[in-house]
Image 1: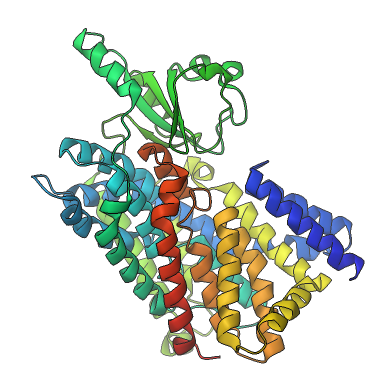
Image 2: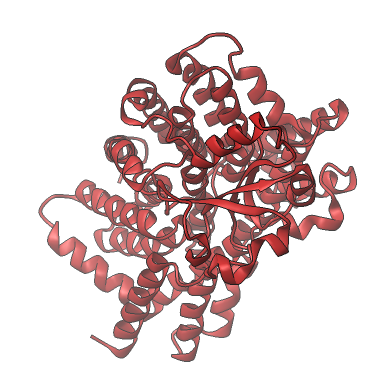
Length: 520
């Protein structure tokens, strides 16, 4: 084993441990590893920075702005309110109306704003019709993931893998190519949720703070009311004790309850450390929502009322029209006849998302002066560093070494077993760390395995997309899971109980269908 291989393996092991322990934001952890590779001479400065100029990464950045434009137009809020049954209904009937539509929406929009908008609306509606909100919130997160695997732009992971494929000199994905397998996984997942989520998910765990608030309301103390907030990565008190941070001085609201992994803390709160993804139940007045409703320090803010923008009809229709034109343009632009007609312009997703972003900014669909606020910079840095880490695994020989080891273990079983091995490895990483980091680690292995076998690498690339997105068994692998865990007060075991069969469904369909659609 050479020095480079040993160094890269140790650095990757340290990276995985740091991501699991949540020592820093994922972007900074990956950037640290990339700098170590630069210092060791495994990466050149040019190779280190290539990810920051990758089309896939820039496309993800602009899709954040497109998603924000759709959110600010009020279109999503209007859609979900029309879908929710207003009379007496059942969990099954309500899910039948909600889940397929949400999956379709998330195939074209970033998952996080979809969940941030829909989760508080669904929770309020469930309370009004006397149904447990816990039967809807995990399914909400899961169907956004299922919808995301069906298109190139449905999740950042697909664009990351697409960018890596192009960097490696292969043909990338078309807009709906991943849907050839993704649609079957989505349909199977939705059917599973319709049949089993009501049995496997818990009933509502009642909040102690809500009981106290109802008592205060009866006594006429109605100036303050409970407000739920989910702490985001930019919250300044992350990893600080509540008593040291002084939340009330910063935000003018008092913390009454901290929820984490299904546990509720209401005593000795000053001694509790604040973590990203924690849900805080505050006692606050309406001015808190007005002041912090648009703040990026909170991933979600709900106070039992509408906090989303009041939709203007013109703005709503313009935003939806631009989204449809963007998707249609990118799809038609991939046709050979269109490429022949416009040989000097590459009419791909990057082109159309760039045009759409600029039009949205100049027509004030989102506030152009605040555009940097709507971009998740940590995700972009994670993606850019993922390209560099993948390159380091190739340069050092780690990818070839691990690929030879995997092939040696399964050499008598054929490429389909190796496809299964790549799925399992990628899926384990995505459940423990983050989806983009998982794709970064799996991609060079998949490429090396296909080269050593002398087979088409495309089945391995597709399986990485499916496995890296299939984060169902833990709340930590996908941000939408983390958001609904807090607002639904779910335990870690709730995700394991309902999520493991979802992982298995994704695995079986992927391993069966992918070789049929993309032969080795």
